[in-house]
Length: 369
Ligand code: SAM
Ligand code: SF4
Ligand code: SF4
Image 1 (tube, rainbow, N blue to C red):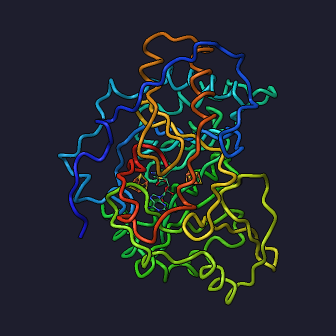
Image 2: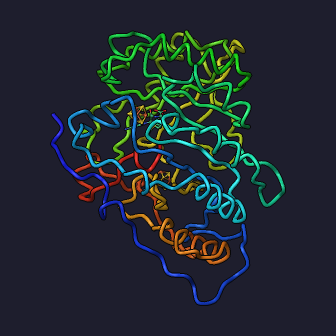
């Protein structure tokens, strides 16, 4: 049973408002944090709401009708998100992931995608624009997202057995509708689709082989995610984590697999492929094999707070800066100076139990997964 704690957002959703450095420097992609890591990826949470209540993310007991979701005026507008993203792009960010909550619940999201698709990187390329969704309304949205310029899609699905999946999403949502969303994405022309499966030991680990079998040979990359201690409400403990090495062993026993090189430094998933040539699978081992040393990601919450780590307990309030008419260069300087002192490496220092860390962390639905 999860203890009821409200509110989840820290500082009433307000981060620290950073001050503008006295001397402004030109925007530069060469800023490194205190551990030598550049800023290359940005995850943007476009809504803190969701139509699922996945037990590991937005448990019903807490995310009920009394939960203090953000009011519309607190959300960054599409114009504000686009402006902030273009400033991040001027600082070397190349990859954007739209997330949430359930991003497709944000009205007219394709309009935002179209606006972001026009932004160029420092090497005059389009941004790598991706989105993570639970797939529930993808059938309605896939074509519009593709037409708007979205490059890639990741769909979350925690099993093929309806009873197990419904128990995890906790809103009785059937597997077939997510599979139909995936089919819609393929019909709309998305290639290189990824499917994320969070593995909770004793809850859905019996689905691992069925999921591997289902997606093997389809061109869709299935990725197994270790259940993480994100937020403060999902009742995480180490006994419910099935280490990726055990998932690898289980799959390898049925369908032989071999490890591949990473595509690029900082890649979150470890890549493997089926020895028979029927495609790739991935493992995101945030608990047992940490990758903080090459973490190049910043996150923007739904209300415009920048977080330097998924497990951070403090954000930096960029909404206030945007709404105070600060210039792009001033905001770029705030990002550079904030990034320069970043020291976050939570996964390398987490205890075996969230309670041991003794700090409240922001919820994933607010900060973006
Ligand atoms: N609603 C969308 C979805 O579910 O795909 C996007 C937001 S969700 C927070 C992003 C990703 O985080 C999903 O793939 C989800 O399964 C994963 N996630 C959420 N809580 C998690 C946890 N406690 N441990 C590991 N992954 C988690
Ligand atoms: Fe919603 Fe995604 Fe969290 Fe599930 S994981 S509750 S679909 S935001
Ligand atoms: Fe990056 Fe924080 Fe995750 Fe480490 S724990 S990989 S620093 S987001």
